[in-house]
Amino acid sequence: MVAVAEAQKIPVFTGDIASLKRGGFAAYGVKFYDIGYRTGQMAAAILKGEKRPKDIPSEYAQNPRLVINEKVAAWLGITVRPEWE
Image 1 (cartoon, rainbow, N blue to C red):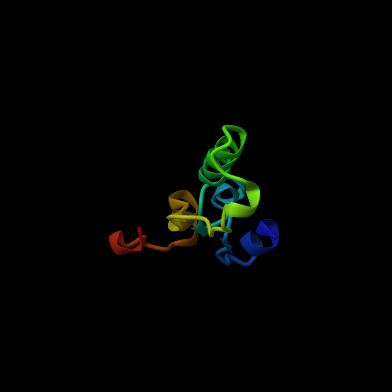
Image 2: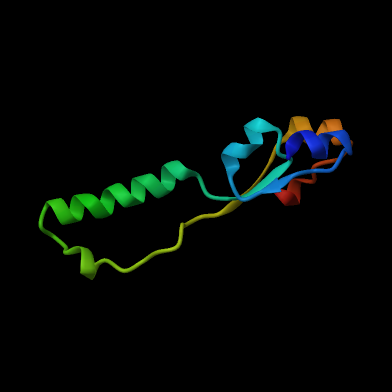
């Protein structure tokens, strides 16, 4: 997808911050590390006997943020504004 978008100079937006390394322009999402860390906390509570799986409510990923690939922005001729980040 990035190759097709690059050929047309179209920015690629994604929900996966890691995709920026593969040529995405911007991502609005969370770090998978943060999700894994929180999952580890939940697992530790279960293994320590502090909670049962059925007692742990579902959660949304916390702290989503906008991340811009400044190299791609420059290549596309997009000026990154401070209020975007």
